[in-house]
Length: 77
Image (cartoon, rainbow, N blue to C red; front, side, top):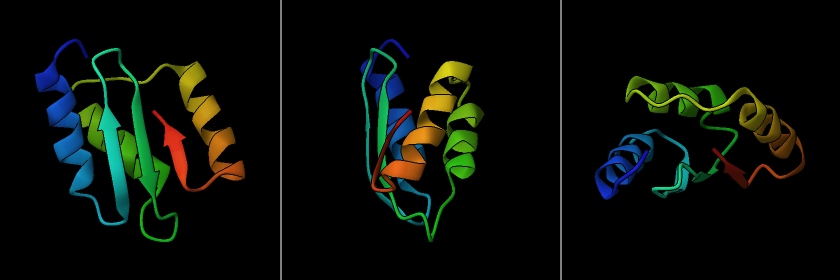
């Protein structure tokens, strides 16, 4: 993710998922997502981003899963 177009593509795609409260992607490759765990799963969010051609690092996915356990409101992607 290197430009505003990439940010916008991710923001638009993830926002369409049911249960998404807020999405913020930046050109540095960081995506912050606030979502309702009762309506959408982390795997669904990841799948939407991967469909666009982006792949999160394994280290980052492990961090997200740990964060999800402790803070279900906000998770960095």
